[in-house]
Length: 193
Image (cartoon, rainbow, N blue to C red; front, side, top):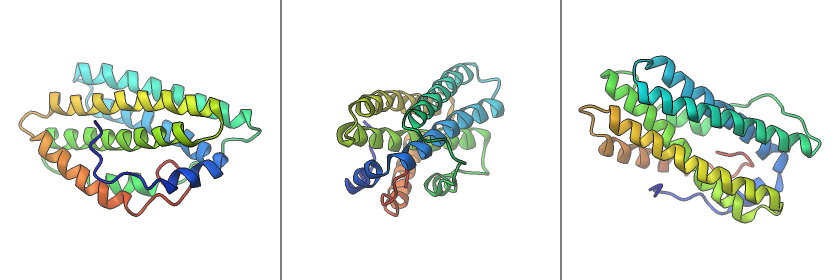
């Protein structure tokens, strides 16, 4: 379903589960950034009614996820720390068109969002199968399902509002580019590390 061209190295799950504190703090900020991204797309496209409605729901869900991750951080006696730069996301963002038509730029932003949701979904699945804490396994399974829905929504919106843009062709290019990017990651206990 996700069509990722390069799966995450299974060793990533070992790095992540050995340092749950770092993982959870990074994960919290990923949820916050996902909400902010959805809102930013709304701000740039306020007249696209179904896009606004769908992305508002995603933003609300991502902020709820942010709160749930913060609760899990605090339940373990830790505190949320300042956000760190996400190099993986920044490398993906570099692929997003800054020029071209309004439709091309919107499609790229939606596909960028779908790409992050797809990779997060894959990694949540890995965590749901490897983390020792049973409550966290269930939590990550539920988040995996949510991210899969978000992924589908972003792809669907790209197709709905893409106009003359060949969304499937552009998505294939995104997948190929992301495979090159993700090959450089997977050694840090962070969601995209």
